[in-house]
Length: 487
Ligand code: SF4
Image (cartoon, rainbow, N blue to C red; front, top):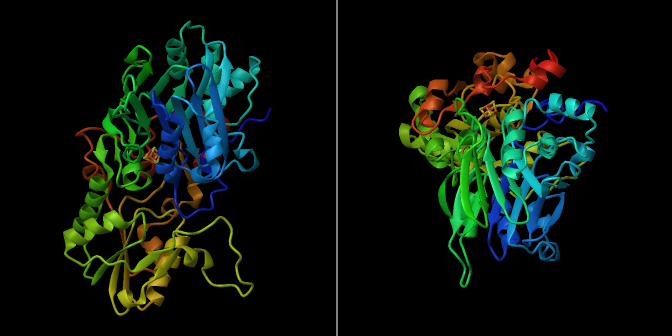
C-alpha cells in the first residue's frame, strides 16, 4: 500500500484564506442522556471542524456509533440520536483535506479489539504515524482509514500489556506528536493528552439530574462546550496525563515522563473561541491583550480601529482601548453562507470575499483605518480586504496583525499550506505591505505574543509556525518527504 499522506500537514492542496484546526472532541461519563450532551458539546465545538461529525455512545453493555459528513446539526437528527441513547458517549468533529475518503476517516474510530470494544477520537497530528504505519503493515496489520488515529488503535490492540489502561499507555509511549484524545468502552471514559500538551482538553462536571446516581464527568477540547451543557469547569487534563472515569470513580496517572510543555499558542491567537478557557487561561483575555500589546508595539495615527470579523474582533477591541482610537465595525460578516454558490456569469470581482464580508461605507468614508486581523496566510484575501476598505472611501488603510509572521507549516494538527505558499516565508514585511497595497503593515513580536498569552505563568507554548523551531523531531517529514515538506 502506498504511504498515506494524511499526516503530511504541509498541504499543497490548501486553498483557504485561514488556517484550520482539524478537530474537536467531547466525552460524557454517566448521564441519562449522554448522547445528547455529546451532541450539544460538538455543536459548541463546530468551529474546530466542519466536514464530518461522529458520536459513539455506550448503554453500559455495548457501543453504538454514527458518523457522517456534514455539520453537527445536520448529521444528528432526532431519529439518529434516539438510536444512540446511552449513558456514556464520546464525540468528534473534524476538518479534513482527504476528499473522497473523508467519511472513511471520520471519527470516532470504533473497533472490537482483544482488549474489548473501544472507540477513540483524537485531536492533533502525530509526526511518526507514517513510519509506524509502515512497520505495522509490514507485520500484517490492515488499515481501514488513512488517519493517524488508527495507528494508535493498532498499537493498542497489539500491546502485550494485559489491562486496557496499560495497553493504551504502552501505545501512546510509541507515538510522537500532538494528541488530545478521548476513548469510550462500555463502562469507562478515558481522556489523555500528549506529554507536551499541544492541544487543549478540559475536564468538568455536570450537577446530577434528579434521581441520578453518581456524578457526570465531562471532557471537551474547549470549555465553551461545558457552558452549553451546564457543566462546571474542574481543570485541564495535564500534559502526559491519562484520566480514567469508570464504575470505581476517577483515577489518574502520568503514563509518560514529563517533557517540556509546548501548548499551541495559536489556540489563543485564533482557533479557540474567545468564550473558552484553554490551557487554563481565558482566550478572551489573551486575545484582548494581543491587541493591547500590538497597539503598544505598532502605534499609528488613525481615526478608527476596524476588525476583520470574526477572528480579529477581540484583538481590535484591545488595540482600540489601548490606543484610545474608536473601535468600529467597518466590515460586516454574512454568517449564512452555504457550501456552494452560483456566481453570475458576468464575473464579479473578488466574489468569494464579498460573499463573506461587506464594507460599511458610512463608517469608512474619509477615514484613516487600522485593520486588525489575526494572521496572513497567502495574502490574497488580505489584499482584497484592503482594496475593499479603500474602495468604500477609506483615506488610509493600516494593517495590524496580532501575531508574528507565519513562516513555517504546522505538523501538530493545523492545516497549513506548504511553506512556499506562506507569504511571510517568502517575502519581507515591506514586500508583504506592498503586495497588500496597504499604507503600513506591522505584526506583533514573538516576545509580545508570549507575554500576551502569559507564557511561563501557567504554561509554555509551541511557537514553531513563527520560528521554525519544532518541539519534536519530524519523523514522517524526514523519512518520507525529506526536502519537499519543508520547502
Ligand atoms: S506550529 Fe503553530 S499552529 Fe502548530 S502547534 Fe505549534 S504554535 Fe500551534
